[in-house]
Length: 344
Ligand SMILES: [Fe+2]
Image (cartoon, rainbow, N blue to C red; front, side, top):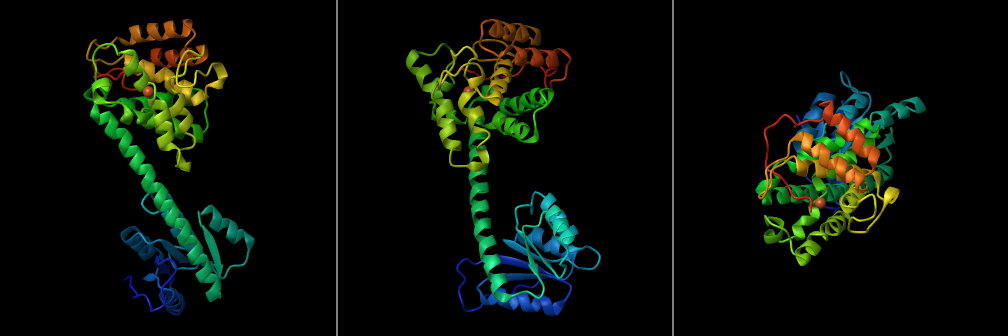
């Protein structure tokens, strides 16, 4: 059973909710008293299974984990926490009497954020705790900011009945094309996020323009052309979205320099943005819009080839994607015609 210890009279610089997991009661009590005296709220667990239980339920800011516990070792518990999305961002400190560097490597491989040696020095403990709590606060702030941005992108999709599922399809198309190009894990992750976030900046485009069935006036088009810049600016403060920003900013550039917002040409255009540009157009062509029916897949392929011939797209990207389409390796193509999205 986890126990909560009331914080002591001395206020901490930053109060944290800290879980101590150790099968040795004396050790738990010693650490708990030190932490409570520093103002922290303490939870206790007597074995690995209970530690996982309390961590999932209480979402502590930090976990001090004894390595040598019966049944499930600290290494195992740490690994389990770091692979569970619900607990993976909680810092874990392994408390160990082990001195071997092999054990430290084992701990790092399990995802441990820091180590403390037994017997635990009180000053060292409190200094590590304060430092990790500070990092946890930043992580929390970043995570909530990222989820706000993602929600915002999905809200924009929901604004327009004609864009239903566009973000999801784009993320899937881009992932298939990226995999065919043998892109690495970071790029693949950026493509998936880029599928959702690429039109984030449309938050700045009025409904009357965004949903207009006919041709846009030059002034309206100028407003639409701002959306990559606005989206890029919204993602700017988030370091976690650094790799997605080039997709957001450059997915409307053309290979011959005739696109927007920066008129980049050729390889000046980031590869991931070029990929997003190809699949964005394909999705627009194969979906219905207020003023036209959805094109067949064959017709969409033909029009994409026209864009390549006109110099708008990098030829090998178009060829690879069309091969994937014709080999039916692209998802969603067998679905009935659906509502569409403008790629103005
Ligand atoms: Fe766009």
